[in-house]
Length: 145
Image (cartoon, rainbow, N blue to C red; front, side, top):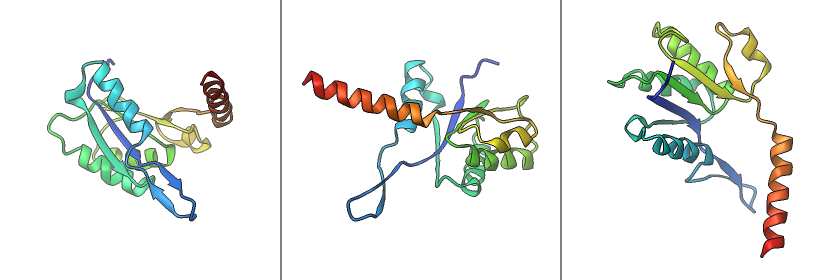
């Protein structure tokens, strides 16, 4: 199925400041990437962003809001597998069939995914390699200035 109307359910990035307090960031790279991708493919009119606090409960509520849209998305990108559990529950409660009515993809590829009916499509983000790539990028940038 070629998806055009793709919704995004995610949480906001947080950082720990020098006082040790957790501060939510105003921007989020994942959300920014979703928006950029949708714009790059001329799908701006289908941009649907739902922000939750990284919990399955809030993702369930976000999905319930998504299901109220007049032009319901055919796919949902969820930024974490635990949140995707809430998405699955909301879709199941609304008798929305995965994958016939809507597709769901997520990130983390946690073990519980294989126990879901249907198995969650999830991407394993190799955080160790991402960290190494970030350090190489930072070091390279410093060498070029």
